[in-house]
Length: 160
Image (cartoon, rainbow, N blue to C red; front, side, top):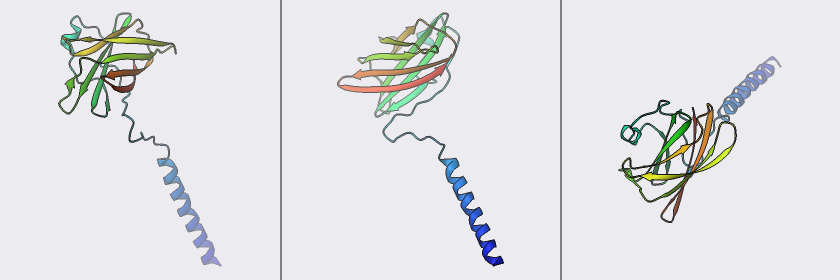
């Protein structure tokens, strides 16, 4: 009888340890294999630059890889506005895509939504737009790109 009680206590404890190990791993989120990864990095910089395009090249922004495409967003606070730079590139060598139609759907920290068309800057080899807001808080951005007949989308979040 004493052996049976000891066995039940040991088996119950082992079961609780097993359930505890399983439940702590269950809180980890994992992205589906076919969805692009999203980085919630803060803005690369919060100071304005006199020569913005010359100072920024691809690298150091918030990156989303979607299929063969590399989309990198660099938000920057400039006075009462937020400057958005988006690098749209393809392939392993990150070849710039100059002829895409790009729109940013932005949710501002106050919850309001704005649709902002992005224009291509040939000198900087990237797409650019300005938001008429530099409010402190979290911005959520959904970039919708049409590259030829392909639609390439990416989601970002950053704080100013």
